[in-house]
Image (cartoon, rainbow over all chains, first blue to last red; front, side, top):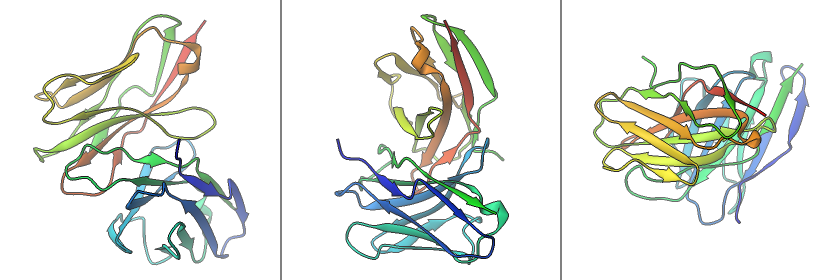
Length: 116
Length: 114
């Protein structure tokens, strides 16, 4: 069964460093998403991406964040200068393009980012 | 205002019994979808069940069913015949027609006792 994959599973970085989280969405999916989940809290939407551009973003997704689809398979989230509060689990998700609301998002296993 | 509210931070249920996890939502859209996801301790998010706002019948998927009460804006998840492997966090989520993102609730941690 096709699945969303994410690398690395755990990333430790120092405050102020840049990190890139990588995702490989399901191959025939056209919409891509990043979410984050701070430990013990709910899942929060960061950004959605379609047709090589951001379609929606939340207030969390400030200038420190960027997304890119550098090739036909990868989807990346870059945090330019990490802060302690960026420590969280980051989930990538993808979905097929369908009209209406009846599509599910398939989530990857997550990358746990720890900023020290 | 919160789009999705889950008022039960934790629930216990005896193995083989049924359990209902509550979810209420807030939207002014007429067209929306409601989803439930399971998050085991390993951390991944597993899709369980979907209900569309125009669906007249409650959704069912195996032991999972969704008690959809549109006028009350509630979409409770019912798990029948609970199993030990059902112990996990459960998240209710919503997508509105005009927005390409999911809103998640704060989750309910379910513990199934043997």
